[in-house]
Image 1: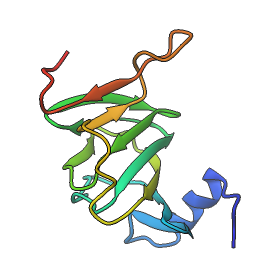
Image 2: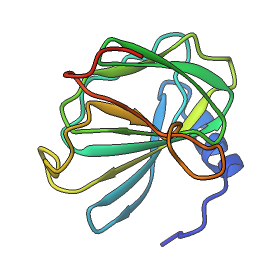
Image 3: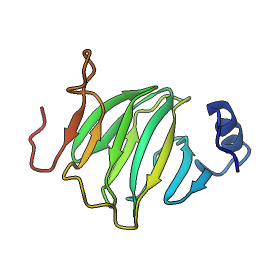
Length: 137
């Protein structure tokens, strides 16, 4: 089993399948690692498990809970199971790692709708949580 996957390898594997926008790279316990690069439109549907996105290349706008969050390489986003979300206005080289984890239906431990890791971190880093009960900032 491969435990070290480079972004270039993931991109090459994805490009080998001209019709696919996503490829599974690793399954380990409840963790599934995929690599996703939408082409013209993000056609994602809500997923049945919690997920974490780590933006690998390019930039986009992440739409979730009626909020638009600009994202770029290195950004981290979390999405609870069942939550509608998608990427819009992405650059041609946009790609992201997706980490699915936990049980079907999600862990049910977070009240956050979607979050990006961009407010309240030490050293001027920040984390933003988007909650249905919270008005846009």
